[in-house]
Each structure stands twice: as C-alpha cells, then as structure tokens.
Length: 492
Image (cartoon, rainbow, N blue to C red; front, side, top):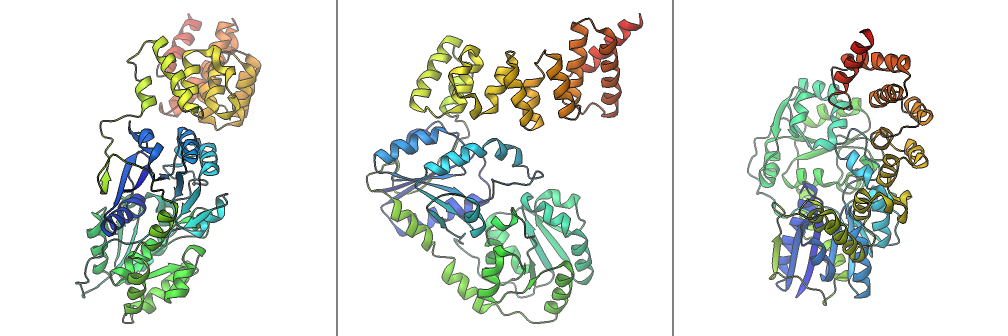
C-alpha cells in the first residue's frame, strides 16, 4: 500500500482545501492502493506517524522536531516534501499571521534546508526560497458546479483577510465602479467596515463557486509587491470555471494567464474603470477559456507526478486505503503534554531530557528545561532563540539583556522589565522609544534605590500617559494603583 501523510498547522485554512483535501480525494479515488491522511501539527500522534510514512508532506512546518524526523527518514530512504502556499517569509505587518510567522523565520530556513523537495504554488514563491529542488504545483479544482444561471448582472470581488490591504487601496475605485454597475464584495466580514457595498460572507466551497454564476464580471485586484507576487492564480481559474470573466491586474503572478487565455487586464485604477465600461457593453464568451481550465486544472497531474516520484513503497500508515482526516479537537502534542502540569518539577525535567534525546533540535524543549532550571541556560546555544536571552535577562545576565535590544519591542520587553541595572534600563527606555512598562520599571528601581525625586517624576509621567492611553498599555494591571499610592505617600 502506498502512503502519504500531510501535516498542517493548527488552523485548517482555505489554502489547505487546494493543497491537501482536493488532491487527496482525487488521488485516492484514482488509486485504490493509496492511503492519504492529514493531521494537525499539534496532534499527539503526528511525530510518530511522520517517522515511517511513504511520503511526508509538511505544510508550513514550524516545529524543529521535524529536523530529527527528516534525518531519520533519510536513513530509511524515505523522502520529505515541505510546502509553502503563501509568502510567510515577508508578510506585511497588518497581516494577522505576521507575528506568528516572524517567530519562525529561522525554523523555516532550517527545515527548508533539510527537506528533499520544496513545493510552492507560484513562481513568486519559488524565487524567494533557497533550495536546490523546488517545484511549482498550481492549485486545481476538484469539482465544479454545472453552469445554470444565464441571467448574470453586476460585478464581484472575493477575498480573505490577506487581501484587506488591496481592498483599502482600491476602495475609492470600487465605489466609482459601483456607480456604473453594482459591486458585490465576498468573503471576510471585516470588509464591511472598510466599504459599504453589497456583501456575501464565507460560503461552503461549492456554494462559493456557484455564487460566481450570478455575476457578469469578476474582479481581481492586487499590486506588484513582494507579498502579492507570491499569490496563486486560483481566483481567476475559479471564476472561469463558472463562466465568469475575470479582470486581472497586469502583475507578474497573473501574466501567464493573461497571455495564455487572452484575459482582460489593467495597469492603473483609471484603466480598470474604462475597461469595465467597455466589457459591460460586450457579450461574454468563455468557452475556450473554460476548455483550458477543464484540461489543465482538473486532473491534479503535477501532484500525481511529483508525489509518486518521491513516494517510497516501504512506508506505512495505520489506516486503510482512502483519504483520512485526523482531528485534533481533544489532542495535544507530546511536549505540551509534558508541560501541562501533571508531573513534579523533577519528573518534568526528566521527561524533557528524554524528549531532547529523541528530538535534539527542539528549541521549545530546551527553553522549557531552562525555565525550570536556569543553571542550564548556558548549556545551550542561547543565540538560537530570543527566549534564552529573556530567561538569561530575568536571571540578571546584562549581556543577554543588551542583545534583546536588537529584537522587536514585544520580545525585548519580556526580558528587559526584569533588569535592575539603571544604565541599561535608561538605555533601553531611550532606544525603545520610552515604553510605558519601562517607565514604570524605572520608577520602581529609583524607589528601591532611595532616589525618591526621580521616582516621583517617573511615576507622575507614567500616570499622565496611562490616563491618556485609557489603560491600553502593556503594563502590570495594578501599575497605575501603585504609582498613585507612591505619589499620595509623597504628599503626606
């Protein structure tokens, strides 16, 4: 039996329909000797199942435990593919995944270097990832609803939260287009806060596709930037499959479709307005384009070719043939299970040591050991993760605390708030643009040192700012009470 395991991050987003669900259902229907399973990264069985499966596909992997697993798989002649379906290497700061992705940049690079093959959804992604073997596998469609609605009216644009910057940028243009022909926005509920147009929320996938049949024109908006260039071309493919003519921005990620299928495109907002006026006055015939989609985006040929080229017949999974979705609703990964508080400190440390023997690359386990036993901090390479520096700073290591100044403020403050050295506190306060939490820490240290005048000045400034911020500051919940109590004591 042939076996494939897909491992994905905690939340199962729309991308994984295209990258896991659709190809898995197609392939297991076509090949009766194939077993494919998908499992969340944080499931208790993920690491165990990953060890000996015929082909392991890691989607946006974050855990360095997979380095140990990949190395053991190589010794067994088993291959591992790592996939990126979005640009998590240079996410814009407004993106909700930015903070999470920023934490794992070094992990991404280490895991990419260890993989046998990288798969991506676009040339833009291929261009920013360093690896000897990278294959582009476009998104495919599994099933497409039959065309029924011939009374098409209006224009539709659809997107997820990752498109919110595009919507803001094109907001005024969309409002102008709406004066010519009604525009409907589909997808993320937050869009309604940005623009007041007809709105359709998220729908089950087949309903989402069929909804395109209501409209005469489909709008794809986007810009030529590092993040946008890495997007897949699935949106216009979906529109074409439903007889909807997509209007595309003239940017690299859509150039091939524009040239191959002769699709209308625009370079500026003004171009878009004029193009829509022209297209609304003309009949639409997409038979040739739909035939191309049916021929090139319904057979999952590249998934089949690349997966089978890298699949070993010596692998195994504890499932029958077919596609299996493993749920993690009530499951936690082995490391979290060790740390959830069921063991004494001595037992926890012993279990963590055993865990590190099995997964020596696990930074999370090493940090957990150092949290329980600070004397162990310097037995690890503390330059590999800022959490080591934070722990060192908490234990009074000024050199580690200084290094935190090179990290984002939300990381740096986790260690610097524990520093007692006044010179370093003052330096950090200035270099990090006077954060409230360090101002309060300065006040506390001045008070501890008996310098009540400076303490009084810092507390007063803290209170003034805190009242202006209406309490939305990253400080101890009782900090304002402490500051007021000190000033009251000074008066008396």
